[in-house]
Structure formats: C-alpha cells, structure tokens
Length: 252
Ligand code: 13P
Image 1 (tube, rainbow, N blue to C red):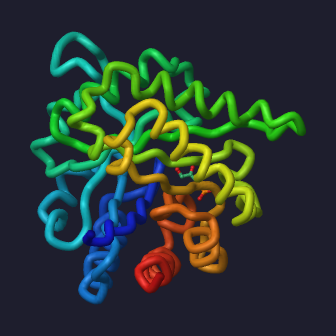
Image 2: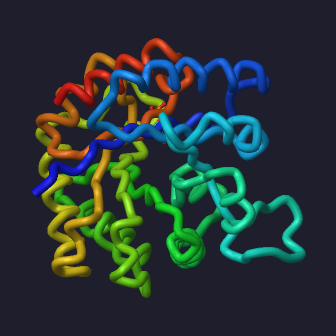
C-alpha cells in the first residue's frame, strides 16, 4: 500500500500585521517546497490574506482557513461561509480550535461546520484537547466525547476529508509540548475511538499534534508520538524555523 503523506499545518492565527509580510512568508515556504516530497504543507492565514495568497497555492502548498460558517450565504454579519472560501483555493479549514471554543463555540456548532466543510469538498482539521490532565485519566473520556460529537452524522464516504489535531490546551503557546510517550498513548487512543466510530473507514483519517511544536521537538514528536504530522502556531510565523520543521517531518 502506498504510504500516506505527512501533514504540516501552519496556523498563523491573527498574524502577521501586513499583507506584505504574509506574502513574504508564503513565498519563502513555496520556495522551500521544491525539495519536499512526502509531506503536504498547509498555510492558514487570516481570511483577509486568502485572496492574495491563492495564486501561489495548489502546486506547492495548500491554503487553509481558520474558521468557516456552515451557512452558504445570508444575513450573518462578520462571518465567512464555507462556500465562499472555495473560490480562493482553500482546501482545508481548521475547526474547533480551543481559542474559538473559548469564544463560545459549542460541540454542536463545530459539528455543523465540519459537515458543511467536508460536504463542500474541503478537509476539516478538527482540534480536540483537554485543558488539564487529571490523574484518573478522565481527560481520555473528554477527548472521546469531543471526537464523537465532531463526527456525528458525517458521511462515512467523506471521512478521508477529516484530520484530527490533538492539541492539549495546556501545551498551546506554552514552553513545552506533550511528551512523545504521552502523545503516542493518546494517538493510539484516538485511533481506537475512530475505529469504534467509523469502522474500516477510519483508516483515511490522519491524526496530527499541535502545542509548542518546534524545530527541536518536531522529529521526535512525529516519530515517537505516532502521529502523521503537526499543527504549528508560533513557529509557523518564522519562515526559517517553519521550513526546518517541514524538512524534519519530510525526512521521517
Ligand atoms: P503554538 O505552536 O504556538 O503552541 O500554537 C499551537 C496552536 O494552537 C496551533 O493551532
């Protein structure tokens, strides 16, 4: 069987300050992609930069959005719909990020967005993650519940358009990631949950990791953590470091 490609996603969050910087960052990544063979790279800038970056996307890196409304169009002030995104060559959408859950997004709303995004032909990068790790391991149930609710009524035929990003909230923006051993356990657990939920169709779903991923820990997290790639925040804003991460993952 052909080996699945790895995935490195840059979540730029509400950065950078200017379109000029955004273009520069994307151009650097695009140039570096010439030598990358086994890894798909996704850049997720703020909405306002998507149209300018879409001409560069496709052949080298993919473009992703950081959110999408599940309605195709209508009176939703300040929102951007899943169907509007497709004209800018957006192939991925990050959904359920803890920073958006904190702003009030419920499991139910996230599920609606996921169904709209995959129904619209894009891939949903679904973020799950606990805020604390209790010694009883209850956080495992929490992750199971987040995944179960995210995938409710998602057509089995569309499951290869799903990526699960395990992002423990305590590791986001922090100075240390999860340990590779703990990540490996969580990855096995998530794959088991997916198998129970989706049966044989679960094989198409990638599991990646996010939370203080950098060029020092990228290799060991992916290799020993048993994941297919990384969702990178801060380090995706520094071209040199992000490219280093891509190269390290591609070499695995
Ligand atoms: P950091 O890589 O800055 O910890 O952010 C992780 C994240 O939230 C990616 O979505």
